[in-house]
Length: 256
Image 1 (cartoon, rainbow, N blue to C red):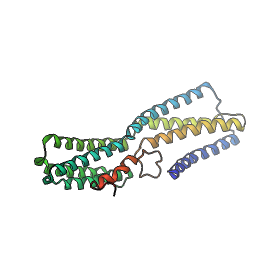
Image 2: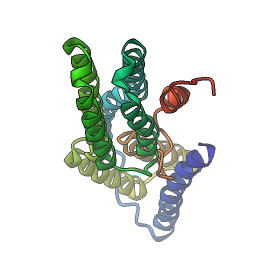
Image 3: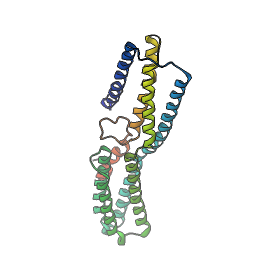
Image 4: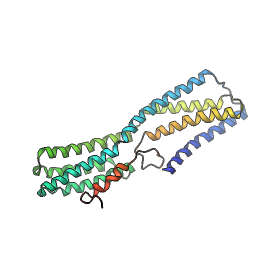
């Protein structure tokens, strides 16, 4: 994780260093043709508004995504517990096939987070689990089977929601508009006359640093499931799913 955050800082440096070089060149060639006016402050305000709109929308999805690993673990554990209870109450039912499919679903979801498995693989496992449950339909009460099918439906719903958050960016047009506005703002800082290096360092450094850094962070937060991408550093914690994986994979011996 530390290396990923260093990668984020490297991307920021790759933007700011050329910007500083352009400012030095503009000072040397006399290209500073703009003056700091209230209109320039209005440009900064409009850019902050766009970035704030993006940040608010992305953060909402991020906060929702933080609950996903725990909800997945809870649903998988509920299925394991229900199937174990069926096996204890009715040994002739033999839920071993469904438990074996569940043992593949747990690592499958973890692989989805890390990018080593796709949603179609998980849907195929859920279809297999559905077939396994169908074999038990005549050996258990209808309310019991209803609970199992509801938990399975919950798994499908959670996967579809996570796949949507991962694959669809939040309002792409606003992304492009905020990137263009930040680029215009940085160009304006380069072409604006400033007195002394302290003023240049503060205005160019502080404003450009904050705008570019927040924009890069928003792009990263927009995919909270980027565990398999080296360039993604702000991802949700998978600890709840990882801690319960042993109980899902080996339900008969959870401590093993």
